[in-house]
Length: 449
Ligand SMILES: Nc1ncnc2c1ncn2[C@@H]1O[C@H](COP(=O)(O)OP(=O)(O)OP(=O)(O)O)[C@@H](O)[C@H]1O
Ligand SMILES: [Mg+2]
Image (tube, rainbow, N blue to C red; front, side):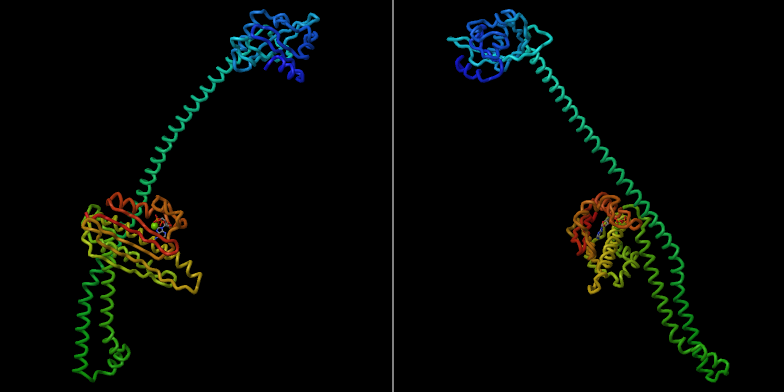
């Protein structure tokens, strides 16, 4: 900007503005500057800045030098000497508007602001600003370091929390295993105890039944002999024969013995299943027929299979030709028990829902299939047509203590323990597929050895 252009512009501005060369020549001023000094504008022509201020020419040149080499606004302080002999402390903002060249020196625009400053020495406020900027920079760095330290701390806290969470999970798992083991060992002991108590008297009854039947038949034959040899028995005897309906007794007593035999045989079967299920004596690995384990479990759950909302559960078995499996039989039976009991619960729930729509007939079913996958693996599938499992709980099913059953009915341990038994104890796989409203299928895969 030429001094002329500057004057054009400055004339309309109310702020005191000066144009000076870097050597301190006043090139142009506007009216507010003249007013501040109490001079006429003409009196300011061809003057040096140093003549109008209190500061030394050294200080002035230093300030103008700073202005001409800085790209930013340079703040300074000028003490104006007014025409009436008084002084006026001003803040000045200097900016180079034409840089120094070989033809001319730099031209600087100074904007004055009347301000009483405590220290009215000439001060290069920029120095202060620089210091402040450095301070700000330092603080920023400190802040960044703090932020980083904070991040590190958060990462460490996260790591610690994860480690704690893992420990907690492990503890929960151990706790659940302990509870389940306790539950199952209690159940196993009770089952084994009951089986033992029943076993002896039943065997005793069963063994004697045969003799009792034989003796009774002999007595009947003897009676018939009497009747043939002495057809005219005394009247009292004939009356007694009619009273007790001897003909009926002779016919019925054989049937009675038959049904007693069937009954005791059934008790013997139940006892065998109970013992088979508990297998307390077989805590170690043993080669067993898994079908026996499944059948025993079904036998134990028999009464639960009988009555659900008037329609008993149909068990459809499709057993393949499985080899004996080397496993912990007692634990494997627990898995069958947990999965079949869950299936029964799901069928019961379904039956309740369906019974509300009276027109629908419900046919609750559990299908148990076994098959050889290859010479090393077998699969056991237990499927029900119960309520099924909702998508949102699928990820939690094997979690210890996860249950959707009411308090007192489910502990939420059945599947988590089954998972441990199959996956960790037997190096097998436990998975399931479910369609809500249609049913669920659990698949157990275990190695033959
Ligand atoms: N066949 C199934 N059909 C539908 N839901 C099932 C089935 N099996 C398991 N579930 C769901 O999985 C949950 C967890 O089963 P889990 O056997 O671990 O515990 P629980 O049966 O609730 O209690 P418990 O410890 O007495 O077995 C059940 O509460 C149920 O919601
Ligand atoms: Mg269960």
